[in-house]
Image (cartoon, rainbow, N blue to C red):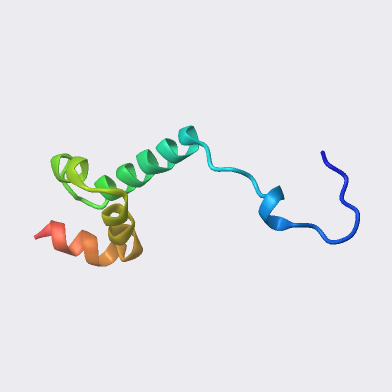
Length: 67
């Protein structure tokens, strides 16, 4: 680990995003959305923004696909 003297620059010391972690996170989101009742074919067509939007209001999403 790098020693810091004086003020620490957060921009240079923050952890970087990795592709593997991002893919894992997207897969978890897809599984959570399918658990709410959204069909798997529909989930496969969604992009990451749409997945997050469905997870922001889970009760609304579940009600929408229950009918």
